Image (cartoon, rainbow, N blue to C red; front, side, top):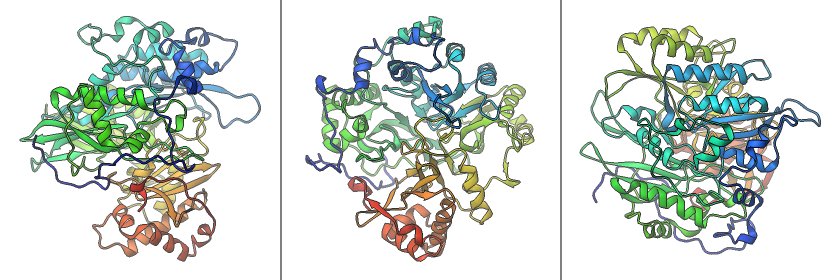
Amino acid sequence: MTHQSKFKNENSKIQSPMPVDKKENVPQPQFRTPADQLNDNEKIKLASGFARGHLYEDFRDGARTDVQEETETLAKSHGIYLEYNRAKTGREKDWMYMIRITVPGGGAFNRKQWQILDDLSQRTTTNNEGKPSLKLTTRQNIQFHWIKKSELLEVVRTIATTGFFTMNGCGDNVRNITACPLSRFSNICNVHALAHKYVRYFRLEEAPHLQIFEIDTSLMRDENGQERKEKFEYAPNLLNRKFKFGFSTVHRDPITGEIERDNCIEVRTNDSGIVPIIENEQVVAWQLFIGGGMGEKNGKPTFAAHSQPLGIVRLDNLQTAMDAIVKVHQEWGDRKNRHWARLKYVVQAMGTEWYREQVNALGAEVEKPDLELDPGPRKLHHGWHTQESNGKLAYGIYIESGRLIDREHEQLKTMARTVMEKFDVEAMTTVNQDLLFVNVDPAAKQDLEATVKSFGHGYRNGRKHSPLRVLSGSCVGLPTCRLSYTDSERFEPELLGKMEELGYGEINESIGITGCERQCFRPATKTIGWVGQGPDLYMLKVGGAEDARTIGSSLIVDEKLYLRQVSREQVPVVTAALFDFYQQARLNAKETMGAFHRRVGKRAILEFLKSDPRTAGLCEKTYPAPYLPPEQQW
């Protein structure tokens, strides 16, 4: 099989099986976990009847505002997280819920569907400030926050009337499948359609969901009124942990006509990424990657990882290969230690050649990979684009941290609804938490853009959105996320505002902020990453890049970890120092900051920070170095 290759990845070598190491500072997953060693989550799932459990009764129990532990575990597969208002103190928690809608490939939502979601959020998502919102996520989903238990059934049922569902929104199953939304209009590579196809294929058993929430069964049928005929065979205790697929794509440059790769979804951050191989302006095969994932666990030897090339599969064998990849992990992945249960730990321990043998034994027919195939740069799709398939337009809107909400300086929630109603366009979401208006009549271009601006979009703190701002972002963090240690969504505009005040706004680099080590906004793939470690404390990550081609890690030199707990007040100081070092010592204006960091190395970064009076004191305290896989020890 022949195919194109242009670029070389930083992790291009296929890993060989890792030797057994009994040291406590390396991952030690328990593969093919014996039944007598299953963790509590596994036991709950095993007895649940495919995530049915006692959810029907528990969600209707008005005597308590939370739910029992078993229900909390199983509810995630139905797109529901139990949360509480982190802004309130006291022994009694103010319980509430987050509901996540699965949105394959980013949509699309027509005017009626959007009205339903917007009306529903208006009634049920009021925050501490009295403002409702819709939250766009890093997996193209839409989240409802601040939901009360008495509203749960109504919200899930109403969402189902749009044709989108909360099933597989969370939980130990295949999650939402991401894909470039603009590929929907490609004449070459429509991976958006594949995301819809395989979300349906990997959906859990529908019957428990329909019964628990009393949803009309006809809503689960396809556009032809048919029930699904093919589906993935989940184990009685489902998967070991969440599993994420993503499709990258290619686009034709409307001016030059050249075919360009587009990695807007950051495909290598997925458990399994799927990249098209193009010949003669056609997709002729797919290259599969495995073992990506951003989440870590403090106090455990864990790591964020880019996926590794597994191999190449023919077009007609893609479903078999995807099915086999998940089945091998379902069988082998750790079910004793949840912090080692993701696919990346199987890949690290056993290697990609071993994994390819396993999937081929299940009929996948995966050939050896092209080690130099590069998925391309992260593209954000802001501004105007011509839709290749129909000549209509798409308009990409930057949404800060994905929050559609009406504030004094901009009314994004009202803006989105107004545009949908006025121009009768469709809305789609991106993995960068932004919004696309698609199928725009070219004659409405100026009017639509003016309408968006009339709601204050495009400015913050009286300034036009800077390049640094639109390339950056954050996860939710406090006050809603139970896992978060500190602010991220509320800290992000504060940090970026300070950077703009200091004159760094025009730098074409990115900052990623998360409230905990799960790293939902993928800070390791940004130029500078800040990971929450405690109340108003953040750990630095370097080595990522704005184009998402490389993955960063903590500042570790000579087995010592530096800048693990930088205070909120000092984060702008360190960020400014890093920008200064880059601007002073880069080879030329074309060298990106990510490439610069990797060229000079962590030792040089540390020595500069030690020599700078602004940051020298912060480098005095060190911590034991956490585990890092070999490819991140640069």
